[in-house]
Length: 64
Image (tube, rainbow, N blue to C red; front, side):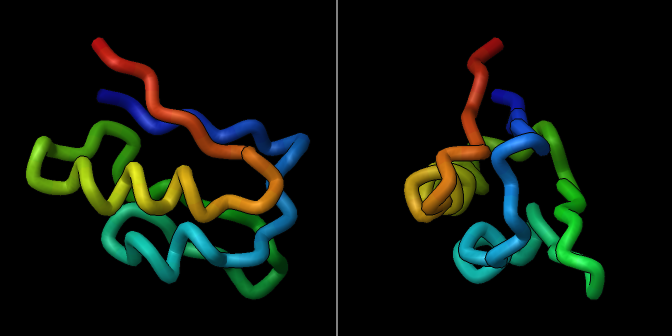
């Protein structure tokens, strides 16, 4: 599993960070940093919640 961000869509609202603070961090300037692009299976639920919470649909999960 790998987290993919479409930075053209990301507006830095921070919903992903609220759902998965171990995976995402929004910087002071609004830019998103993915702290772990390849989360473990134990982090899958948090990653999926972050993807679902993104209002701009900037996040996705790619299997493999």
